[in-house]
Every structure is written in C-alpha cells, then in structure tokens.
Image (cartoon, rainbow over all chains, first blue to last red; front, side, top):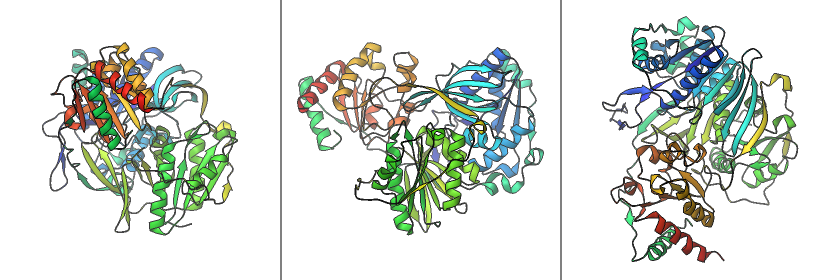
Length: 265
Length: 329
C-alpha cells in the first residue's frame, strides 16, 4: 500500500493573532506547528501501514516553513516527505492549491489512499480533501472517525463518517481520499529517534514545472478567491453581568427574567 | 438565466430538510432581489422528495430543479456533483449557495473543482459591495475575520454558516414550477455506497440547536451531566461538552464544542462548569447570548459571557430547571 498524507503547517492554536495596517497577519513569536487536525491523518496513515504493509509519503504545499510540518510527520514515522513550492505558488486559494496538490500526488506514482485532516486551523476552509479527491477522480470520504475494514488486495474500504445525525457507514473502492476527524485515533508523540531521523531526512522540493502545472494555474494567478481585507473582530463587551440572589432559586428566577427579556427562551 | 440568478442546494436527510438550506434560500432571495435575478433551488433525493419542492418555494425559491432517484437517496459526492454541476451549467447562475453543514462543506469544494471556480467556505455575512459580492468569514479560529471576493470566476460558490442568517418567514401561497431532472450516472460509476446509518441517540442536534447547555470539567464526572440533561430537556436544548470532558471519556466526541469539535451559534449558550479556554471559545463565541455558571469568579468564560453566575452548578442548574418547568403548562 502506498499511503499519501497531505499536511500543512499552521501557527499554534494558542497564538495571539494580529493584523497590521497593511493587512499583514502575524502570530508574534508563536511557533509554526503541524496543523493539529493533520496529526490524526498522519497517525492513521502510520497505523494502516503497520497493519497492511507499504509506505507513507507526507506531502506539503508551502514555503520554507512547511518543512516544520514535514519534519514532525517524519518524526512521527512517515517514510518520506515531499515539499511542493516555487514562486508561482504564492497567494494560492483552495482552487489553485487543489490543482497543485493533485498533480503532485499523481507524480508520486501508484497511490492507494490519500489522508487529510478535517481542516487547517488557519484558513479553516475544509476544502483540500474534497477538491483534491474530485481532481484525482478518487472516492471522497470526509469526517471519518473509524476505518472499519480495509482490504488492500480487493481494493476496498469501509469507513464510518461522523455526520450531524449520526455515523454513516460507507464502503468504497480504492483509491480514496479519507478526511480524518478527531476520535479516529490518539496521535503519538514524536520520539527522540524519530526527531533524529527527521533531522537527517532529505526533503525534495518540487516546482510547478516538476509536476506539470502551468504558472497561470498555480498560486494567485490560478486563484478564484481573493482576500482583500483581514481584520480583527470588534472586542466583546468584556465582563459578564453577574446575576445573584440569596438562594439558588432566587438567582435562577433573576436569570430567567433576563433571558426572557433577551427573548432567547 | 443569467449571472444575476442564484442557485441553492437544498439538503435533505431521510426526507427531512436541513434548516440551514432554508437560511441559504433566504440569503439567495435577498441577493437575487438586489441583482434583479431569480432563485432556483436544487433538490436531490430518493423517491418521495417532491414534497420538499413546494417547501423550498414557500421559503423563497422561484423554481425548483428536482431529481428523484433512488441513487440520490443518500448523499454521495459523485452523483450529487454530477447532477448539480449539470443543473448549474444549464442555469449559468452568478452565485451558488450551499448551507455549511458537514455534507455542504464537502460538496462545495468538490463542485468548485468540477466547475473550475472558487468556493468561499463558512460565510457569516454576504453583501453586494460596488457590484461585487463580498463574503465575511472567520479565520484563525475566529480570532480574525476575512473579507473574500470572487472577482472573475462564475458561478461563485459560497457556503453559509448555520444559524448565521435567518430563514424567511414561510409563505404558504408562494408557488413556482418544478423542473424534473434525470440523474446521469450508472451505479457502477460511483465509487462509494452507503451501507448503514447509526443515529446519535437522544436529543436535539448540536449544529442547528437554538439553545445549547454545555458542561465542562466542573460537572465532576459522567453522572454530573444528569442535571444538565434535565435542564436541556425543559428548554428543548442540545447538550454539549468541553474538550476536557470528551478527553476524559465522560461524553462521546459527537458532543464536543470547540476548536477540535463543533462550532455552534445558538441563541442561548449555557456554559456550566466550563472555564472557557480559547479553544472552547472558538466553538461558541458567536452565540447570541452566553450564560456562564462557574464556581471560580476568575474563569475566562466570564469575560466572554453576557450573564454570569458564580456558584455551584449542582445548586443553580436544578433550580433553573425547576423555575423553567413552572413556566411550561
């Protein structure tokens, strides 16, 4: 089995985000990390490899900073890692990203499964998995909380998708793109040996030319969505109005009166 | 049809419409009226879906494209994209709206890749500004907001955040034509098959609930959720949980609200024994009214909440339930 896992590097979830007057987004001195949702995808890829054999390739579209995510994926246990980037990739939206990632995955040769995280905590579009699946012509199975069966010889998979109303059990023919969600596994910590392996690994970087994507199809030139303005939302009031009473019942009555006045009950 | 027209996907599950789809039709109606165009609702489902077509009209659609086919009974990306992309190429609208349900957020980008166009996800506001549709959406877990536009590609696809827009009042006299469409895929061309469904047991779905009662570490254990469930029952509310609760195994992941769980924006969010870490706030900060019940007056949740009660939730929550129960005839 050849399993590909698509990853992204993001600012830490605790990072304090700000925007300056020119619209440049900054996360202070907070580190870049492997997108937390992608940890589930990497872990699941490793578990599947260990059970069914084969190897796992981590792939990431991004500038130098993307190496941080790839290193963590390799430290967790991925067998190889590829970065995709050149100046033409700058300013990508999900449309141009999906073109570049799909072509890069095709360049990897035979692929049985592509794993992605549910979403990335920065732009939070949730679009990479479904759009790459469509371009590759693979089955699209997002929100997967359990891989119930995988038959590599028959090329079939059965998964449980966590949807609003419950768990949908879906069988599909491989190759497929699986979007993992929290709950599917418990991502491992990186070991000292893993970190050492990651620091010695070679990380090839493919250009748009290497994967056969025309410059005008990639990055800002190939994007449909523009982001003219990013801004901080107006701050919320600041402090709650404290509701009190001499007894729990009186406090409850006071609160209910407030909620009735707000027309929310 | 023209680029002033709007197409909306109406989602159904087991014959029941997603409330977010009516919200999307409401947005579509407003935009189409401003642009001088029409609203077409696309409804896909198994046999017996036709009844929803008139509901879509009551909610503001001018016409409905209906595909009734057993192949479409369950949502699957491949046949749904095929049908919708055919309908959209035919109608050539300027805008496609999809409610940002889980299925909607999977369908939107697949459709965008098929049509080589842009999809703006999870919009909380949509307005026409200088002739260009401008979407506002939260990024970096709602710490920042972004304005997005699709200057050239048509149609432009937007998914609308659940409960960020109000559905229109249903007009039972509104009617319009229903166009029947045939699905064009053979089953052997579809790579996936839905083989079973295991519903979430008990209660109201979190995503579209008007009221959410959520518990955190302060509930003390799995048994501590009982008074919260009683309060939720009286209010017709959904129950939610913080990450600490889910990681401790007191509640299943399905109930988690926050960055690695669900994002909700109910009218009323009652946070019980939740300190309010930033990762939790991400999932509920857009709630209209937030009430915090917490023992520690210093908890960050009191900075976000509109109303706070400092005290023992095991006293306050049952008292609230009793007071509210008196009001129910």
